[in-house]
Structures are given as structure tokens and as C-alpha cells.
Amino acid sequence: MSLDIKKIREDFPILKEQVYGRPLVYLDNGATTQKPRVVIDTLTELQESMNSSIHRGIHRLSEQMTERYEAARETVRSFINASSVNEIIFTSGATGSINTIAFSFGEKYVREGDEIILSEMEHHSNIVPWQMLCERKGARLRIIPFDEQGVLDLNAYENLFCPKTRLVSVVHASNSLGTINPVKEIIRMAHRHNVPVMVDGAQMVQHTGVDVRELDCDFYAFSSHKIFGPTGSGILYGKEHLLEELPPYQGGGDMIENVTFEKTCYSDLPFKFEAGTTNYMGAIGMSKALEYVRSLNIRDLMNYEKALIDYTTGELSRIEGLRLYGTAPEKISTFSFLLDKIHPYDAGLVLDKLGIAVRTGTHCTQPVMDHYNIPGTIRASMVFYNTFEEVDLLVEGIRKCISMLSR
Image (cartoon, rainbow, N blue to C red; front, side, top):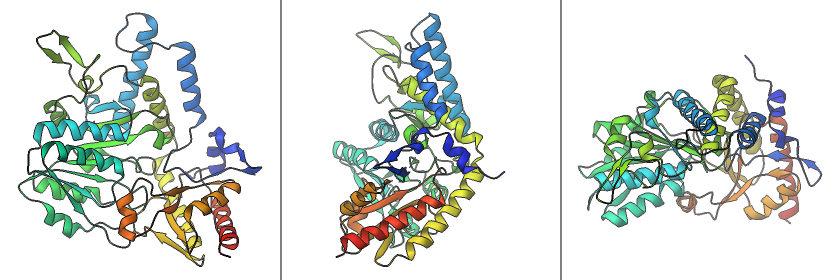
């Protein structure tokens, strides 16, 4: 099967938009992906025909919405190949998922003097929750360094383990460097020390298939809006026996079995971690996005993006004065770069006037910028609906930036 990119682009209404009279070239997918018509229509259908809170009602609307919500959980389970729907927790996003484990795992297992291993390329969402845990518990962070290409030093990683190591939390693919980390090997190494691993998959699931059982990760997190679904919803996967042991992160409705003023008994998995009225419409919309991705054949998507990566890398490398940050052999279609003597914000503004949407700044990875001693980068992040022609427009736009701003 070969992908019909023109036909795929027809599924995404916003790609027909114009910006300042020019066709939109959307290269900010690392921040959020666009939504296919099936997701947009699903959200409209839910609002128009069955809006009702889940799990609590015996009337038809509530029953319908509950059925759709739990069917969405099964769709997620199948998409990442989890063993059970009990291992699929709906959250507000990858950040919410990481905070859940940082609190719940931390309350259960982390004590003064213990250590958590992170990598130097983590998103702030996979740094700050662990810092907060360390401040509460008197624990400390240990950091895996990366080299100039953006490749983690696994020898240094191995040397970080000690009897006080309680958990490893690492990004699957870097949102600023594009590096795909060897998480299967990272997990295998941690498990040799009987240390569980949390994986931040927010930048990975939209690019490749993820099989949590093959990875053997203990926890995995991702966000709906990074994989063509609505905002405000995400997934925490956890091995069932581990989730059973952890205390809930939040208290309230729907996560309880019985409440008295003397004692509360918590509900079974997965509901123990879903306090209050969850974003049930977002969860259902996300499931539609996952079904859409699966309908396209993930292997074909990966092959197309690999060709897009190779082409973009070649074209950018030919631009004099452009430095690319993140040149790992294995990477997603994310390109961070600087133009000699041009501030990234200024270049971003020029590209915007040409209809090209990129991201400028630190991309919530300040330690990465500190590593290279730079204030930030320009980032073009692509997915399967981006085209080689759009890469050409980006290159043309960069050359215009250089011409205008280097005088």
C-alpha cells in the first residue's frame, strides 16, 4: 500500500486555510496536531445527540455516553497493545499522566535520600513533577547526559544506578531534538536493577506504532492532541499490578467504592485514578483519532515520514549559515535550527507572514538549550500530512529570512 497524501490532506479541513493570502504550511505539529474530519464530526455528534455525564446515570443518554467512553478505553488498549483495559487511565494529557505517577509512586515508594533518573533532554513536564517530589521527600535527581548529536550516553546511564534508585523517567522522542531514544534498552537496563521505568511518549505515538508489552515499560504517557485528537485528554498506561499498589492521585467522585466520614474505600482499576467528571468527550474523540491513524497503516506512515526526514535534512544542510540541533541517527520528523546572527523570533515572524507556521523558543526544554548555550531555536515539526512541496516552501522562506535579516 502506498499513501495518497493528497487524499489524506483532504481529511484535515484546516489544511485548506490561507494565512496572509498564502496557503497554510503547518509545521508546528510538535505543539499540537491538526484534527481529521472524523474527530471533528464525532465531537459535534456527541454534543448534539447524547451529551450526558458518564457512569452515574441510568437514563439512555448517560448509558450511551458511558458505552462510548468505555469503548474508547478498549480502542486505546488495542492501539498500544496493553494487556487489559484496567491498565488504561484517562487523564488530562501527558503532563497529567506524569504528575499522577510522580505523586502516587512517590508517596508509596520514595523516601529521603532516594534517587530518580531523568535525561538531559526531558520536556519540563517530565522534570518539574519529579523536582516537586524530590522537594517533598528529600530525594534527588540524577541526569543522563547527551552528546552533541543529541544521543543519550548509555554508559553514563548505567553508572547512575545505585541501591537508592527508585525510578527512571525518560522521553521516548525529544520534542526539541527529534531524537528517538532507545527506550527498550533503557528499560532493560533499569529492570536489571529492579527499577521501574516511566516513558513520556507524547512526541512518539503520532509517528510510529507503540507496543507497551514489547517495550516492557512500566508506565507510558501520551496526549490526545499530539495524535490528531482533541485537547484536554490523554493516557496513562501502567502495568496492572503496579497501578493496584499505588494510592490514587486525586480524590472525589467516580474513584470511590464507598464513602463515610470514618473511611473511604477506593474503586477498582481503572476508575481509582479517574476522579471527578473526566473529559469523556475528549477520550471518545481521541479514540476516533487512533482509529483514523490505524486505518492508514502505520508502516506506510513510518516509511513516508522517513523519506520526508531524509529530504528535509538534505535541503536544510545546504543552507549556508543554518545550524541544525539534533542530528541523531534515529529521529522523528522534528527539525530545530538557528540561522547565523538572526534571532529565532524574528525568523519566525517572517515565516509566519509567508504562511509558514513554525515554533520558536526553548520548546519547554531549557536544559537542552543550556547544553548548547543558545537562547532557543526555530522548530519545524512534521507529520504524515506534510509534503515535500511544503519543505521546499520552508527552505524558500528560510532563504528569504536570511536575505531580509542578515543585512
